[in-house]
Amino acid sequence: MSVRVLLIHQAFTTPWQGGGTRHYELAQHLLAQQHSFTVVTSNVNYLTGAQLSDQPGLVTEENEDGLRVLRAYTYPAQHR
Image (cartoon, rainbow, N blue to C red; front, side, top):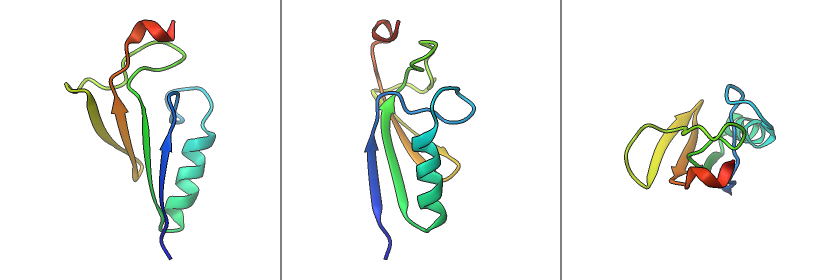
């Protein structure tokens, strides 16, 4: 039986962005078991304040190693 997981996490990071990656690792574990995993997160890196998506729009979609990542616009001053 395949499970669909939705994670809403403001400070989601991947291994190459720095920071805690436990949610990324959980997603990879579930993807390896043929489940689907989607993350809704900020488009701003919580450690640096840098924009993580250069695509225009309020929400952008990325694929990070099979993981669907939806990045929602976030006002960058909130992260400093």
